[in-house]
Length: 180
Image (cartoon, rainbow, N blue to C red):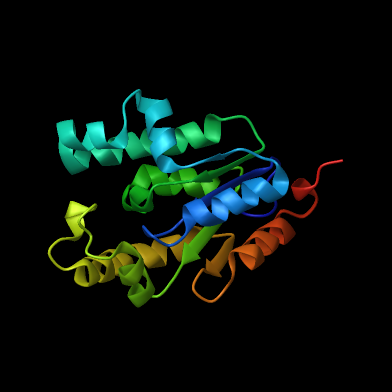
């Protein structure tokens, strides 16, 4: 998006474990807007859970389901806070969708070392095995430049408190944050 969105809609993007759910939940609490994470969006858009998609179709099916979930986030009525899948920036159509979205697109990021601490062994995320740090570093190298190019606002969640992240997002929304 370029300029101010016309709707009160915030899309949070960034790597896994960066804090999309934490910041999204806090922003929702501060505004009274609903927060929906990627897993819920996948369910709404596809009728099955993320785990079911992964188990039946693998990584390609997840990417397709997450693309539909991104479009679902933009179809939901505003106001809305949504956490989108980390991998949406790997699909050209999704990049174009984010670039043209009538939403405030916020890139949440943190150093790889912080993400590694947050994901631990990566056992819940088999694509990170056997070396979560190397996998996260490889993913970030490809994704971070795209996240940066799409973001209306960029926040380092390791250096900025959740409350400060929320305030910076509210400031970026301007009058949309507090409709009269």
